[in-house]
Length: 83
Figure 1 (cartoon, rainbow, N blue to C red):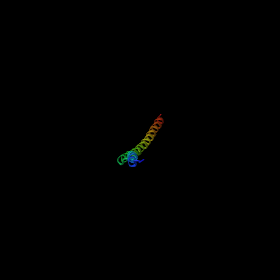
Figure 2: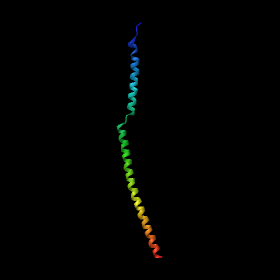
Figure 3: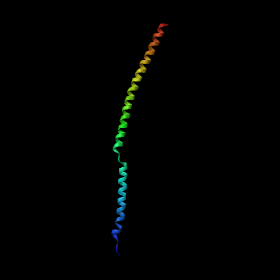
Figure 4: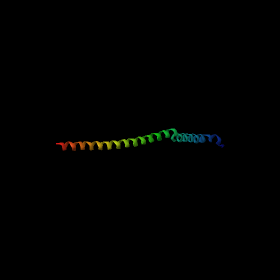
């Protein structure tokens, strides 16, 4: 009985190659695209910058509210003193 070993060899090799090709394809798909990464980082940096700007505006607005309430209270005080 003679085994035809060389005829059997390509089958496992082709499966292994197909598996490696699929694995490499999944690895390539999972890699982060550098352009996309830069866009995401820029977006989140912009979001952080906008959050800081909003925080500063909110702080200034709160201070303005306090001054306005103080002026209203002073006006009420002086109006009550005239009576």
